[in-house]
Image (cartoon, rainbow, N blue to C red):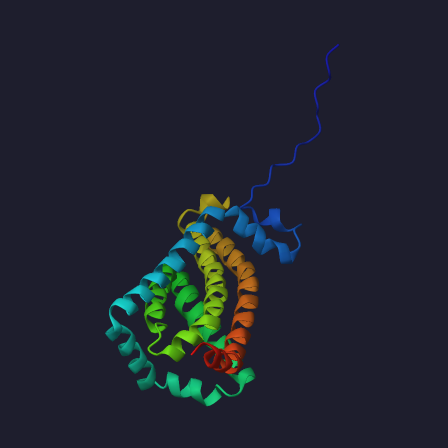
Length: 231
C-alpha cells in the first residue's frame, strides 16, 4: 500500500537575505543575526580594523615626527583647545565625544560616502584608522599612563565602527549584486542594505555611548591617580 501524494501547498523557503525572514525575530536580536550571517566578513573587518590601527601606531613609534605633526595639527585646528575647555566637565566632555564619533566619523566618514559610491566609506575608514594610530602615540610618560585606560576606549569604539562598516559593506554588496539579497533590482538591494545598516547602527550607538562615558570619566578621574602610582 502506497502513501497518497501530499497535496498540501508548500510555502517557499525563506533565505537569510530575505527581509521577511527577520520579521519574526525580536528587534534586539536582529543585529546579532546579521553578524552571524556575515561572520566571515565581520572577522575580516575586525582583523583589518585593528591591524590598520596598530600599523599607524607602529609608524608613529618608528617616526616620532608623524605623531608630533598630528599633535600640531590638532592644536592649529582648535581641537585641543575645545577638548581642554570641556575636559573638567565629564558629562559635557562625553557628549562632545559622542557627537564627534556619531556624526563626523560614523556618518560622514563611513556611511555617507558609501551611499554615493559602493564601499567608499571603507577606504576613508581605513585611512582614519592609520591616522588615529599615529595620533595616539604618547609623547610623554604621562601620555603612556593615559593610554592604559584609553586602550579600553579604543576597543569599544572600534567595535562600534566595525558594525557600521559591516553595514556599509552590505549596502555595497547588495547594491552591486542584488541577487545576493534575493532581489532582482539594484535599487531593491540598496534598500535591503540600508535596512541592515540601520539595525546594526543600534548596537553601534550603544557602544559609542558607553565608550564616550568611559573615555570622559576615565581621563578625568583615573589618569592622575594612576600616574601618581606608576610614575
